[in-house]
Length: 467
Image (cartoon, rainbow, N blue to C red):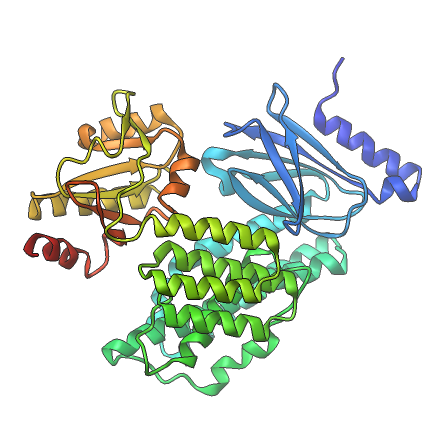
């Protein structure tokens, strides 16, 4: 008779507790079940350096043994990333439904409670993100009060957890970091929001004391360097201090050459951890290349990246990415990728372009965006009948996509999916469903990354029609 995975993990824990063995008790187990799996495997990594591929069995279960568990953050990847805190002696069983990844993720087994806590904290922060949008119009003093209130709630939540379930210092440090850097990130976003208001003369004077939290930011933490709240916060921070370096010369734009040029210099000079530095530089250059429109500026950024980043693997990746980005410059022929039509026929993207065309993207995982983008496209169709508007869904669930298109009465002749999502996403550098491409009737790129919701999107359509 076959044991269930949970029973097996429980037995491992019992044997470790009853027979202390440094080799056995220095290990840990991660297992679980994937509901509605996207692939037949999961990837487990530590600090995103070394990683192992673990295949699912016929019931979509997997089990992974860490022979010498280094206490800290590990990462589980199956369509999406999720951080886990693992220590020697843990036997963590997870269950996740890919249709609602974050909301459905639960843990059981030894070591589960701390990871359920981190997941709940993550969801609280995600929930707060929507409310915080309205806080960016507050005065600096009122904004700090709001952040202090949120911090107090999160720290009380952590204190209550520690009281009922004592935890190691290593975990408590990570939990505090999750709270701190989520708050620090919001402070940086407030500064960025204020910088954007400069162009309208609506900025608020931010007192020097507002920036006191920056003295608490660690710019070289080895244990946190791949942790999302920490890495994201540092990205916001370097965007803001890069803007400060050129303030008065240019408007606030994270995509400009000048901004990214200074940002790379600041990362090089301020980050004390080499791996973290390489990751931040790589992330900066990837985001820049995705939006770049000037080949000379791209070459300069690439040279600086190769000077600052010593990873041969990173250099190879960025070199390949630059070649793809060059093929997406205005006046280049749109790369020909395969699409799947509503009738489940494979068609070429070039073959569906008969007139000037706006190509937009959407995902079933972002229902609000689906509604908003189709509403916006409906408006533009009425105003600019000279253009075709083609929607491409970036999911791999054909039947679910087809049902939604049919249910919402979208124009089926202008709705498609990618035949090979990964290949097409790389060929077109799709990093966000907010990306929109403008193509002329001959398949030549007019603009590779318009934001259809932006103020100047319609101006670009008019400019093309009036040229």
